[in-house]
Image (tube, rainbow, N blue to C red; front, side, top):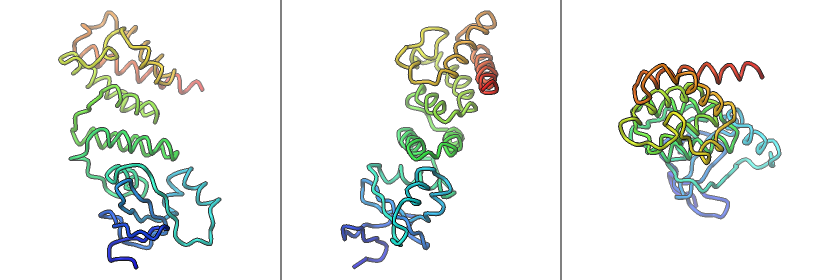
Amino acid sequence: MTMPGSYTSKEGVSVPYAAGFDRGQGDFVMISSENEAFRVESSKLAEASKVFRYMLEVGDSKKQQKELKLENFSDVLHIFLSALVDKDIDLQDVRWWRIKEAGELFLRFEACHHGPALLKSWIRAGKPVVDNFEMFLLASKFDDVATGFWAIRDIGCSGRIGYQGNFWTRDRWPQSQLRQLPSAWIGAYAKAHAQCQERAEPRSSAYWGEVASRFLENVLSVSLHF
């Protein structure tokens, strides 16, 4: 028997609903690694994600209830699904690794167009980034040049005060990090530093502001030529 505020899984287990995802006539239920259920409308998932669209097209249309279990924490699924179904997301007390995992879900389910908005909301929330390169890397996977610009201008500059790794230097970039970035972003970043060699002291905000602007121009120029 289904208890109030809970969902009965295909295995017959009663799973409590996550707050905000327990109402409505949603025909798709996602279950987190913490055994919380998220009820959503499959039509909204299909509209937001190519992978969900394919899953629903090839699935058994006769089954009224669809279910998917993921090995992600509930708060990660809350961020992910809120973005897909256009729910407001409060990121005030959210840690970076949860943003990163939600971003990886966007990539896995081919819903990358939601990535830039999530990163923008994270920046607006004024939250510190645990690994500054990871912010830049995740932005590159979404081709989110606006966040890339922000990371270079603000993180690059602040990195001159506290050590943030060799990526935020003029030319001592670790190959292990460069290999993770798209070639267009690597070229744009390297070219930006070369263009600014004589413009300002490399530890100054003026230098990193100029590098950010040049990076934006360079990466957009590459995109326009494809």
